[in-house]
Image (cartoon, rainbow, N blue to C red; front, top):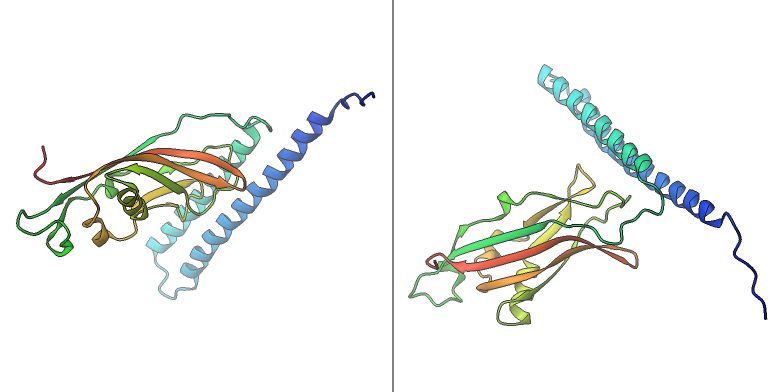
Length: 217
């Protein structure tokens, strides 16, 4: 039984179709960015107390939006369809929590604990791979370590990795509740943050977490 030979030229059409799909998604991102910018600028324009500072702020917002759109188009035109990398080098996020625990308190008394070192203000944002045309609102996180699964789950649930409200290709790492971090189980944890794109999972960053007592050398 003979099979039909592969049709020539189909790869080219696949690449064209992929490029058109990415162009449509890029246009949607730019349209949302333009809408957000104009909503902010128009609110300033309607303010009866519109000042020179507000005018400068609106100009800066408009110029920043134009630059972001230009970068978006440059990425679209500069990336060949079908060139999605099989593996990419990802950054490492390191979070060090230092918690002061009085010797006479019992480790479970969160009211007497004090977060001596808050790592989140120093954590740089994470940029998504450039080939991803539409980034999901949040990144997933998997961690292992501590004394068991319960410890790792408690640490994982305390951390949020969410898309920036202005830069839709960037993710910020923060905590869900600063108060809850005082109750984190001591130990070291490691894992990975990743993006879910339908049935595809893309690594975003390696994640390392250390939770230790303030008096530990």
